Length: 249
Image (cartoon, rainbow, N blue to C red; front, side):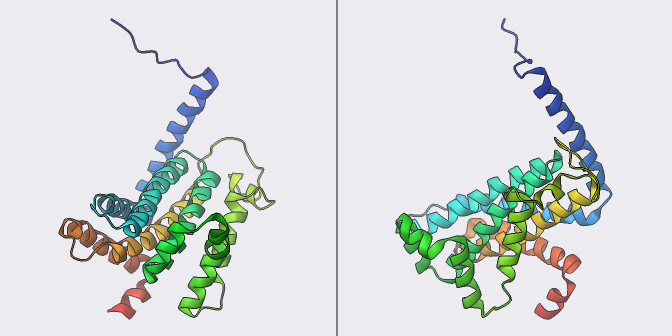
């Protein structure tokens, strides 16, 4: 009888993994004591369910398949980002969230103008960079929505500076204390965990709204999942943006 080798990893990598698992338990303790963080996580799960049901739609529409793949991309991104956050890697978790943000902008463009999907899908590299680079997509959305505040650009830049690019500001997310030293490896600190999961929850709701708008309204299989998301979204908005609920009522 063959015995399973449980010592495949070098000893230091095994110790690192064990430390990550200990931090995960600490993170779950922080979340257990915070109903708002639990609400963010429930929203994230609801949106991942929505992405999962969307991928099951059998279609020959190549443009719709593009949006399915983008929704699947967000599923994977949320799973990975959450895994990293709970293991103490806040900067790396936020770096993945910038990918989600970029995907949100692209899905928003496609949901508002379905002709853009085919143009993006068939574009060569030069055309894609000219018309669909992150900055071009944001500019199209701002023009569509009549916005001049550049809020989308500001949020994208914040994610870039704090998480995605090696800038002087990126070390902020490697400090357990605001004025303390940066540390190597994972760490668990309640404020940092709350910040990352809160951003994850906000992005999840946006992703869910877009997937919900793209899924064919007549597709019966998706109705329970779409309804579950809508109810979860209402609870989330009532907690974090009560004025939005009042205005939509």
